[in-house]
Amino acid sequence: MKEKMEELKNKIMPDGKAMILAYDQGFEHGPRDFLEHPESANFEYILDIAIRGRFTGIVIHAGLAEKYANEIADSKVPLILKLNGKSELYTEEDPYSPQLYSVEDAITLGASAVGYTVYSGSKYEDDMLREFSKIIRQAHSKGILAIGWMYPRGKSLFARKTVSKTLKLALEEQEQTKLAIDETACIVAYGARIGLELGADMVKVKYTGSPESFRWVVRASYPTKVVMSGGPMTKTDEEFLSRLEDVLAAGAAGVAVGRNIWQRKDPFTISGKIHQLIYGS
Ligand code: FBP
Image (tube, rainbow, N blue to C red; front, side, top):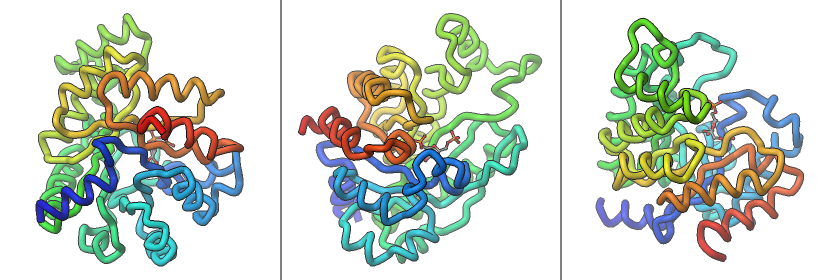
């Protein structure tokens, strides 16, 4: 089993680095994310970007994985099946993203890894922690990898009467940096650390505004690999690339990005630049 996992790690993280194309937004945000660039609603267009852009993994839900099973297998781009999901139509302040598919489903669909979002800080965090920890154990027992989308989120991050010690520190950090609370290194590092403690092979987290602060996130979750989440499309390629440079300098393994690729008119140029930064070619 260990050998199989090592082989998959080398596929998804050659040289310990990862460049993953995220495409679960049609579920998480809805088709509004495709309005910017309507071709992006079509998975064939996305898979072509993953192939020609030399991505080391593609993240989708089971529906697309099933419909395009042959094309994905032919592409040789490792499949990362996202096992939980929720729509943005649900607007409660404490989010819960239920598990929708199993590790068995992922294996049947040919996945090299499974993905799961944990909203720690939500009043439903215990359900998500339980689901994700079970998923990690099952994935590892079958020899595939587990990746955590570690996004602290929910009412408790805004509570001012029952403030946790971490939140106090995050508020001080926020004073100085003016970052959103869920982008402070204090909070992001906590989410990433939970991923390590549960056993995730890789965690996907938000950018914390500087290489210095991101270094703490990487250190707090070592040896779990850390990748930066893309976020909304930046005005220029350079703005996005400079964030990537920051996190790479801080020891991150790379990026798991969606909108900053496929919302652009020219997804190939930026993909090439990202590849250059991560792999030097
Ligand atoms: P982007 O690069 O487009 O931001 O995608 C990263 C991602 O984690 C997706 O996998 C997920 O669908 C989305 O962000 C969730 O975004 P939000 O922060 O709005 O929940």
